[in-house]
Length: 275
Image 1 (cartoon, rainbow, N blue to C red):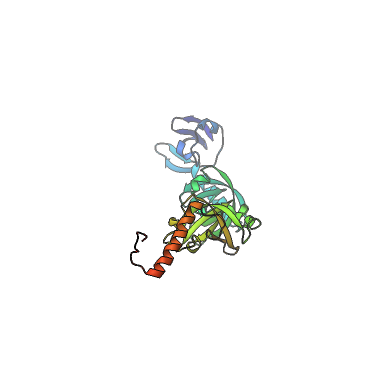
Image 2: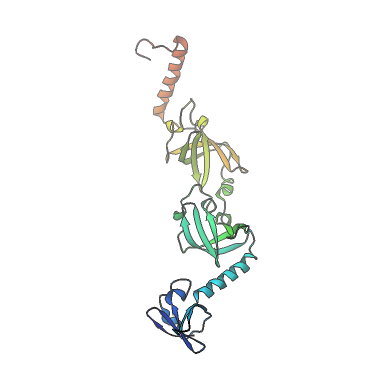
């Protein structure tokens, strides 16, 4: 039983003997006001005993840890993939976030946080946040259990909902989000992304997508195909109506004219300052 406090911790009584509990051994987490423990009876573990010096040092934290581990083991036996919980974010990393459900910690990989791709976890959650999670996988083969959590499974998939609004053959407006050697990815809104293959960026051969578009550019594209199984939407810039500014037209006409001249006269320099 706690009989009082001092600068270093709690003054305790055990079977008529005086004992001491360091502040760091009172609780699992730091307890700023030790006075709330005065008068309380608590289960403790003796961590130091010196009969000659009549010194007894106790720990409540060790008992709490043991109780938590026992509760954790009991809870682990009841967990199943598909179960949902309210979880507390305990740590945020570049690859995801760790969350706690009653003493059991699991990882929410960044790919399982939202339906968006390649996100920064710190922009979605922070330490202390309460989030709804679904258990995706439980691995008990190792000494330390590995549990995978997911958040996006509990919210509507924008790709599925967009299927009701996106039709093959229609033209839509989107924003170029990133460029790759093989094409440009376009955000069509609500987290739905499509790909304009490099062969569909222009009506002539290009070396790189950046020759035609740039990131954050708003463009109008034509929907070529939608594959729910692979979650892929194929788009075309060259087949969309009104994508090129009128000032681009003379350039393309000149390109065609130059092509015809070179086909007629060969690839050498053209007289008259044309080539």
